[in-house]
Amino acid sequence: MNLHLQLISELKRKAETDQLTGLLNRRAFIQRITGTFKPKESEGRAFLLLDIDHFKAINDNYGHTCGDQVLAAAAKSLKSQVRKDDILARWGGEEFLFFLANVTKDEAIAIANSLRQHIAQLTFECNNEAIQCTTSIGIYHAFSSSGLEKEIDSADQALYQAKSNGRNCVVLYE
Image 1 (cartoon, rainbow, N blue to C red):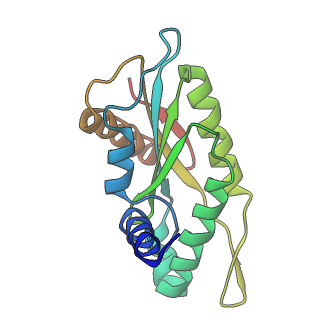
Image 2 (image 1 turned 135 degrees about the vertical axis):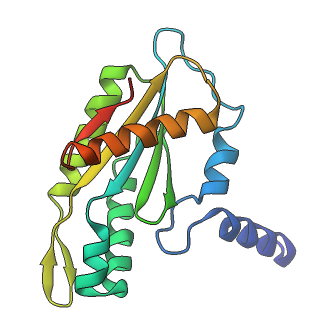
């Protein structure tokens, strides 16, 4: 590959990737989703919005460098759980967004619970201390698109309900 093409490829990667976590950024996530997905009639699509519980306390108690380490490690761990057709991005702050293609509502709930349990079992090392985190997850499931903004907003509403329910849980948007 010539130098010009290498530079273009590198710029594209940097424009699409969150620098801290190595995941897709919000813009790249939206570009990948918009207009490209056709669900199977019998199944559907789901958005899972994950938030690391009490993340501000990690930054306050251990420092922002430690918070960044937790975010990067959590992202790496979440990425290891992605199925072939799933799309994962850092949505913002301590939030991660999954798009699950061709899943039933029950499958989306099972995947979300598996992700929640996976993160809860991790130990993050910061300043010679072990930190454990939990996540709250909101799910929106549908058989066809009702508009990306509405779908993500619905997952966000479910996430707020999960936080209201005491955190470290999964809530399906109803």
